[in-house]
Amino acid sequence: MTVTISKTSDIDACHKLRMLVFVEEQKVPVEEEIDDLDDISTHLLAKDTDGAALGTARIFEVGEIGKIGRVCVVKSQRGTGLGARLIEACLEELRQRPHLKQAKLGAQNHAIGFYERFGFRVIGEEYLDGGIPHHDMVLDL
Image (cartoon, rainbow, N blue to C red; front, side, top):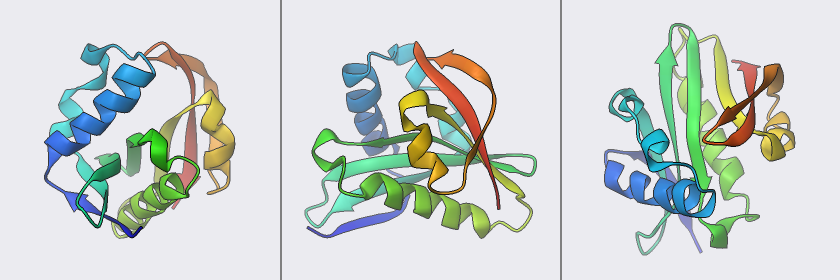
């Protein structure tokens, strides 16, 4: 199966994926999942050749920091490398913005090792986001 990842304006497709993964599977309250940052974010969408949405992520800027968030992949595609490809696409997009010095994300604790493979490092203390333990992680661009 061929999967493409590109910037999208199809926020509905991104929301559907996030509702499936975060709200239905992980039980994140819906009011915490959808926020006003979607309006200022660049959204990436992974789709197969039939146009089915398989994964998404968003990025937005805060000063010299590019924030990556709402990264999710449908269950059937986990373990295929799609999540890594989404992160690589996010980093590629951020690196095209020369004013950005650092990438930052909030990682669910179980995914810290995944992000460390890209060079992210943990900063700060553990916190709950959507009832799930997280740590902030940063990567110099």
